Image (cartoon, rainbow, N blue to C red; front, side):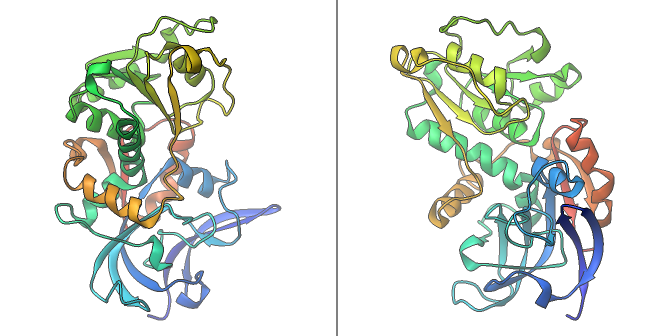
Length: 330
């Protein structure tokens, strides 16, 4: 290849821009594996990076896109060979490494996951970092003792990518799922994914007591702020809360009481910096016992690489639900 198309972000303080450019392989950050990109996806972090609404890039310029799936073009390591179907999610793409919004990506071998049997390259990006993060939450919560008989799992920010997959995956494992969202118009969508109840975020009484009525067996929180504070005060004995997002704020206001009187656990979920063996294991589970049932319902947009710019603002303003797949190859 000589040059190829990529969405390149310049995050210099006085000159922020994101454009579809023609670049060469030599311009990419180092890595042992070159991937011909076929699919990617849009995550909230991608939208923040492209619009400049969040400080995502740690170096500049970089190709955007924290996810990519495709075929190995070249490999300097025996772990992978030309023609292998692979995927990369997170792992510093579009933060410290050039990302997946490009016809070719060059990445460290430790970031590359062989495509598991049972899912296609397209499905892997429909799942992407969002589904991977939801699966990490289940894996860690159940490792910490979460079971369906402990009570319902409440999921905040339920119409987003992580929330949608969390509803699907938890309900598929026998949990009663309660979806919380500020978008009541998507109640039917969440019901199809497996939610048994819907709560409007605007109608919640979050209370102010150190311990509120214990209602939930556990929780997956994509919001942070006041909602996460309330969850710590309203989860039942020995329940787990998976802390994932910060759309509603980075601060929480709680006390030690839920932790020492109810023994709850607040579990941080980081999908970017995962050990390679954990990353591969979770993807194998996503093709097996954690395979989503409603991928085709969760993917609500299917776009080309040059259409990414038309969609990212909807993520920043919260005007989306589900997932967007990006087709890199024509």
